[in-house]
Length: 449
Ligand code: GDP
Ligand code: IMO
Ligand code: MG
Image (tube, rainbow, N blue to C red; front, top):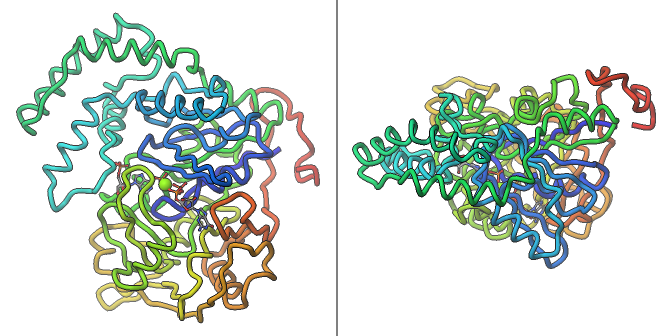
């Protein structure tokens, strides 16, 4: 049984929630490996809409164990609210597991995120203001609070007593905003601990035991490759590694335990927050895509910026994620356009650039070089096979595949599970033996996989 990593190939919001939900039926666990409640993954089941920020999208299937891995930064208040929301809608949530080693987003991280954004003014990143950057910074600085720290009140008080004076000084003196009271934080942490204690686990052990049993696990990325701290358009990025490699550090697996990397992308580009966006469409065509595609942030409600599909960062994303196949979402939203453009290269300072420069200053000067394709008028939401698609839509998918260098295995024509076209088989790589004992699954490369 394979291990599948689902990874965003653009600037987030590619439809990872739908993709995870579509693939999750056959897996036993879905693991989030990075990010925090900056993520907003929407899943539609008939009339019901679920917006998830922390709980992995597999939670909608009762047989799945949703796991929040060590690489996630957890705002316990969001998590508790999300568990309550899911329970109130009839889902059993006791099975949700959270890594003891995941770092906690504390109230001072959220305050610092907002204060830093305000101070940066016109240079602000446009973060979700969920405290993501400051929480990851403290993790790297080794002064973070981990989920397991919530369980030991006296020890936590000691840690906070050492950290808080500096946080408060920064907030009060540099940013002129209020600080936090030690007793109040300790009381809050005790409440979180009471609610979340029975969800905490060594999730790496859970994951490795399941892999040794030959179970099929899915690792659900948040954000996307172009928001990656190392590979995205720095500094307009998030503070974690959404790329497939993040599933190893944040999900508790080794690189050779990944059998499949399914890249998720939309048939056009969107971006929330600041930063260069070479193919951005600011006029009528863009407005139409925003309206038809309901391109408003799941987490912040912000209007997303939209643009033509950009194959330059896509090639980069296919390489750094070692994408084995792609799910192309939201092609239905392009119906009704006279022509559809794909950016195939940039012109920067008079030179042609084919390789994603990632440097924000270079990207800000990049002029897109476009290939043009005739559009189609037919609505696509009822198409269930490639032959149902109009010729021009099929040609567009073929062109995106050619430019990406990876197989487009799945094409999505609507937000619901069944609005998905199985275009081609998904290739898997052979897996070596697990460290926890002899591999008991089917023989490598066998048809059973
Ligand atoms: P994520 O953050 O990558 O999970 O993506 P979001 O959930 O933030 O945004 C994707 C939006 O597009 C959600 O509202 C999905 O329900 C919706 N969606 C996903 N795939 C399709 C599709 O093929 N067509 C349409 N019309 N909507 C889709
Ligand atoms: P999902 O998982 C789109 C963007 C923010 C901002 C930058 C840094 O739904 O695809 P942060 O709060 O992470 O420090 O903000 O990253 N961003 C996202 N954009 N989808 C997301 O998640 C995002 N999470 C963060 O808008 O530009
Ligand atoms: Mg989203």
